[in-house]
Length: 271
Image 1 (cartoon, one colour):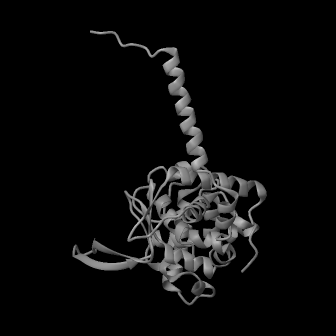
Image 2 (cartoon, one colour):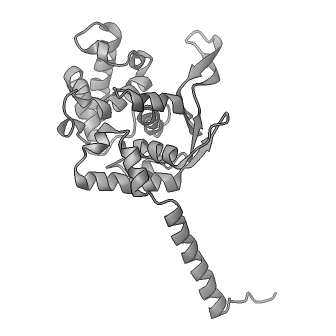
Image 3 (tube, one colour):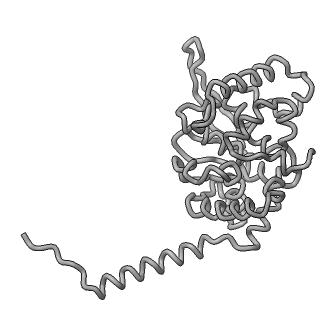
């Protein structure tokens, strides 16, 4: 057997130098310029009012999302740097104090110019299989990418409100870390799973049975679809209109505060 030859010091040094050059090039190519950051920041009222240290942390995390995720256009949509930066910032908001590892199970973000059509198949409680065609503005696949409508995001930017499509879909991804999407993400060791289940179940039941209760009409009715959608809608509203969530469901707000390790109510003025 021939002996394995060691590379000469000169060759090894050159290879190391090329690797270092590649790392520096990738870092520069994925850098978040001041112009891109300012443009993306204008699309998030919450990000704009964060304390300086948190805002700096969010900027670095946004750059990490840009480096870690692959952005792909569909149906002819052209993905530009401002599009990438805008989506990455909103994706970074929920994990500001959690870290990028919470997004390790998925790698791609697909953007359509508008709503997209999907074919869905499900089995009801009687074992009957149903097939339907749906037009969606966002989707989080259990073992796949996040899919987004750019038109929906542009509407959010032009008419700010309680919706945040990217945060909504990212919340589904966090939910899926525990297996099925059921409104029960993996909680921190210092959180009580029974208290989470109790508070979310009570709020979800109230939304479904008392849709005309004071303040309930301001919550996106899509939250009543199922517990997974309730968690996703509550999550996006937690970051866009935290005073609304606290006013209607204070126990849910406190659970989200513990899970996301953030308290938007302290930095955002009431709408």
